[in-house]
Amino acid sequence: MTIPPPLRQDPPRPPAIVALRDDLREMFQELVQYRELLLTMTRRDLLLRYKQTIMGFGWSILMPVTYMIVFSLIFTRVVKLETDVPYPIYAYAGLLPWNFFASSLRFAVGSLTANSTLVTKVYFPREILPFSVVLVSLVDFAVGALVLAGLMAWYGVAVHWTVLLLPVVVLVQILFTAGVTLLLAMGNLFFRDVKYLLEILITLWMFATSVVYPVERIGGRLGELLALNPMTPIIEAYRAILLHGTLPAAGPFAWAAAVSVVLLAVSWLAFHRAEFRFAESI
Image (cartoon, rainbow, N blue to C red; front, side):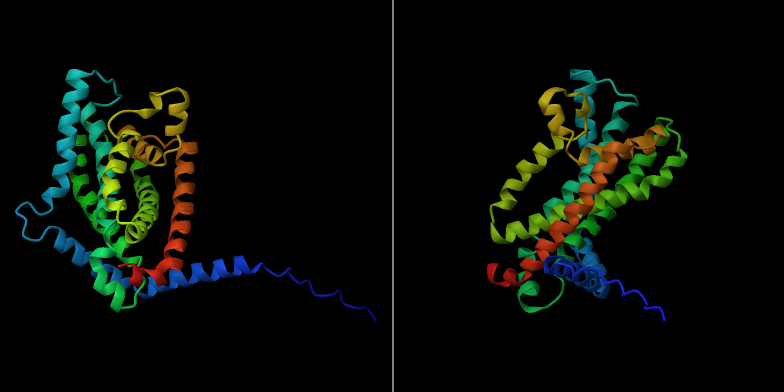
């Protein structure tokens, strides 16, 4: 008679890992459960943003177009900047995703304090508020993309098969943007100075990113530091697949994608665990 080998037992998982797994599962389940509320809040924010405005969605186009004109005058008339495509389309291809990012941050920073009644009296996943802001800015991004399509036709930039990778690049930017908005919304709730510092942060971050000029040309220690900025590979990925018909640089884009996933997971978890303090901080 043979004795069967003892059943293999996996070693018990540390309580911290079990708690992390349970928190992540709860967060995703709640977001799926309240997905209709997320869409409702997105529609509400979209209507409020352009309520009683004459231009409506035209405002989502005006900002990047204005910046494109200004920087085109600077970098083609005052300071000559050589780019591999006409500078206006080079600038707009950077300003469009940057406007998506910056707009999300500006509106998300006060998303919790602006909805104090909901936060204090109604239960729902509070992350829906900054997430809805990101979705509204994504709509603006889609509207602004029509101008980019027109510029591509005007300058004779052909559409390549790499445009099929556009959803991947957009997804990475959404993940990164959502992670930052969660931190800003939560930080502004506890420290109201955050909303005042945000504009300085956005301005500095813009010039540390390849929005209107290629920061990779900056060498030395500063160049190495700027290379860690995830927004630069994201914006360069847009230019690669849309304007050049090439794949994004694998290493930098993989770095940006990894940072985006980790940042969203960490910020969402911190946001989720701090929710019980939101009501008393408003």
